[in-house]
Structures are given as C-alpha cells and as structure tokens.
Image (cartoon, rainbow over all chains, first blue to last red; front, top):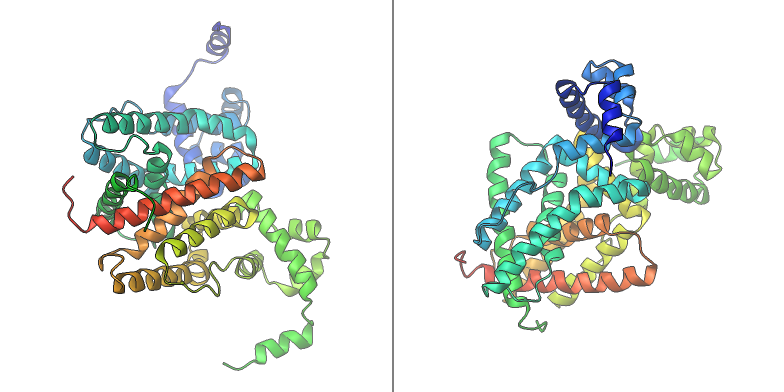
Amino acid sequence: MDDSGALRRQRGRPRDPEMEARVYSVVVLVFAEKGWAGFTLDEVARRSGVGKASVYLRWRDKRELLLAAMRDRLEPFRGWTHTGDLREDLKAMARYVFRMYWGWAGLAIMRLWLDARTYPDLFAELQNFYLFGSVKMVEDMVRSAAARGELPASTSPALVLGTLFGVATVQVSMAPPAPDEDVAYRTEVYVNQIVDMVLHGLRTADAGTAS
Amino acid sequence: MDDSGALRRQRGRPRDPEMEARVYSVVVLVFAEKGWAGFTLDEVARRSGVGKASVYLRWRDKRELLLAAMRDRLEPFRGWTHTGDLREDLKAMARYVFRMYWGWAGLAIMRLWLDARTYPDLFAELQNFYLFGSVKMVEDMVRSAAARGELPASTSPALVLGTLFGVATVQVSMAPPAPDEDVAYRTEVYVNQIVDMVLHGLRTADAGTAS
C-alpha cells in the first residue's frame, strides 16, 4: 500500500486533531440519539461549531465520518490482555461492557449494529473494528483457561461473548433511568451474577445435557 | 371504564381491520429499517397504499400509530403458560426470542428499546406491553421450578430473561446474513448452548462464589 492518499490529504488540508476530537464527540451523540436515518453532516457541523465546509472537506460522506468517529472512540478492549485469572478477567470484561453501554458511545454502537442489518456496507466495517478484536480476546481467554483445566475444551467463546454483551444490552436498555450511584451498584450486582452463572454453567455443561 | 370513547370512534369512522392490518405490517417494516428518527406517517401511508387522510384520521400521530402496531404484532408470550418442564420451557422461550429477532418485528422492537432511551415517553409504554408480561412469565417459571427443587430459591428471574433475550440480541445482530436453513440450524445450536449454560449455571451458582 502506498501513502499517496495520506500525502494528498496532508498537503491539501493539514489534520487538526482538536477539531477532529470535537467532531467525533458530536458524531457519537447525534448518532446515539437518532441512528443512521437521522444522522446528518449538517447537524454534526452545527452542534460541533465546526464549519460545514471543513466537515465536508475532511470527510467524504456520513458513512466515512461515522466509521472514523466510532473507530476513534470505541475499539473495545484495545490493548487489553487477560491476566490468567478467569473470574477476574470475565468480571473486568463485563464491567467494561456495562460502563460502555450506559454511555452515549454504547448507545451509538448498539444502534450501529441494528443499522448494519439494513445497511449491509456498514456490517463489514463493524465486524473489522469491533467484533473481530473482541472475539479474538475471548478466544484467547477461553483457550488459556481450557489449557489450565479451568474450562472444558469445548467451551464456545461466542457464547461467553454473547452472554457478557447480551445481558448488558438487555439490562441497560430495559432499565429505567437512575442516579449514577445506583447504576454503579446495580452494575456490580449484575457483573457478579453473570460471571457466576457463566463460570458454573460452562464448567458443568460438558457433563451432559440431561436435566 | 365506560365505552363512550369506543362508541365515538365507531360512529365517526368505522374501524377497518383489513386496513389496520396492512398499515401495521408497513409500520413494523419502516420502523425496523429506520427507527424513530426516520419513521413518518407519510411513508407508512405511501407504502401501505392507504390514503394519508385515512391514516391521520385513524391515528393521532406517529407515536400512537407505532405503539398500536407494536402492541398488535408483538406481545411476547401472549397466552403462554409454562408446562413445568423447565428445560423444555426455557428452550421454547429461547426459540421464540430467536425467531422474533431474526424477523422485522424483532428488529423493530430492538430499535424501539434504544429509541426509548432518548425518547422517555416511549419507555413506559414499552414496559407495559412488552417487558412486564415477559418478566411475570419468567418469574412464574422460576418460582415453580424453585418449588420443585429444580432451581435455587435465590435465582434471579431478571438474569434468566436477560440471558435468553440478550444472547439472542447479540447473536442475531452480529451474525452475517445467511440462508434460512442455516439460520434454523444455528438457532437450535444456540438454544441448546444457552439453556445448558443457564440451567447448570443457576443450579450450582448458589453453592458459593469461590472460583
């Protein structure tokens, strides 16, 4: 890959990290509130106080701007490594997912997954920057726990990931608004319940399917 | 409750069940594609082939129309009773949730929960027609299983519900499009994995939290 594109961009219009950060924050807010159907570059320009011309010069269209903002703000588990303590690692992951989903960026990413079902060109991008990294991290964690004999070798990483992200999605979506300290307390209760269920469930599930 | 409202409506404009059914189907489609920010009565009228005037006479605004359609199409577990076989009941519930989420009505309801976070007057309605009935059903199921000694008395119905709905949400949202027979096969695999994990996890979780 040559870098003539990057050079062209640099020559034409020097990057302005402060402006980008401001725009990205507004993108996450507007998208969290309205999703793809209500998301416009005009509203982003207005609410970020950046001129429309600058926004249109820097990003080609709303798809490019949205994906740039999401990549910047929300690559889950970037730089994480598992510690080898399976229970603590799962709890840290679950806490991370809850914290993300209670906030604007989490609402934006939940919306983006639903939008990707009807706008398929968003789907491949989402897989690349969001899903594959998370799957890889959970696969490593499960494989290493299986090697230590803490989980059956047949454990499905997709089920672990689906449970951590899924229960958080449902609890956050269906919870009435509450003060921050209640949210923090409830999160810790949920995290412990989920991790207990997952660990006990996966360790004994291998024993057979008879109830 | 008197029925003068119903009488007034009947006199002014006789209900037309065939027209309503057609409009409700289109509401679910349009809302599934676009969510609240992109949902308009004009598009519903156009795509359903029903005159705009009729739509505006029958439903006051887009909120009333949306909620009427969702109530009509999607009261989960309406009329269900649990059989007393916990594993089979959980599998039937999980299958129902997956089937719902793979379809347009499921995408619409997932969107509606996210929209309810930024449009709070949608939230109370959603709780009433969607959440409370499901919670009640799972509570009955868990209580009855606990009475038979099949689950610890401390089992959290919210965790059971969150796991069934949550794993389905994540698996459906993050799955690439696939032929129907693949979807049916994968659903059955997921259903068995989830129910195994939930049953084993909840039965042993009570034993303590030491890993």
